[in-house]
Length: 228
Image 1 (cartoon, rainbow, N blue to C red):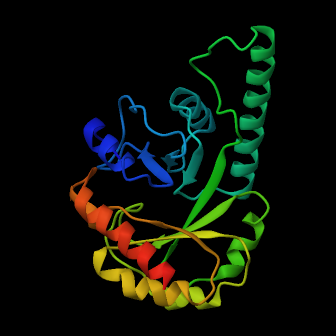
Image 2 (cartoon, rainbow, N blue to C red; image 1 turned 45 degrees about the vertical axis):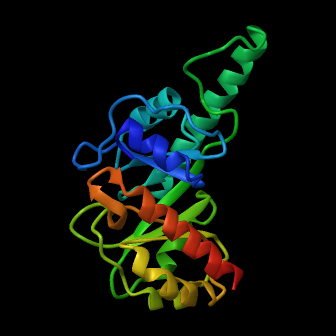
């Protein structure tokens, strides 16, 4: 997400997550103020090999509920990040005790921040590479490996997921559009631990501007197919 009015329109559709990219090389790089919307929607910051201090600062500034790591972040990096988040949250709780719940504009979310680690897939993937991350992330996200760090608008071969060996929940991403609902149903019926669908470029008029009617139709079509 990028523009205020469009953010509010998409939020009215009640997605589970809204993503904000904090990566200067991205055409969707977010700068500005996130408008108010339902607290049931998780504000997600997308980062690429960012300094830990900057990630923490932006989590506090925007009160992010989730962090999506879209670079080459190691297990050690994520472990340090979680430790810093825990320290800042503990500090916030202690400060709140001292000031008797007085409002604090810059604070870590009251709940722990979810960590989503992205991995790019093309025609094949070695899922063994994920094992070290199992204990340090909340979810995986599988996107299409391409020229850009996400938002390439192309799909990878979803049949690769048939070899996914873990119970860890994951998001499916990469070029998902309105025409993919039937194919998505086939993938979902394989009883893979798919937690959510991450959509982006196929629902845009330009980078960062989402097509509301198409998103609404996609959501309804996916829900209808789930009922079947």
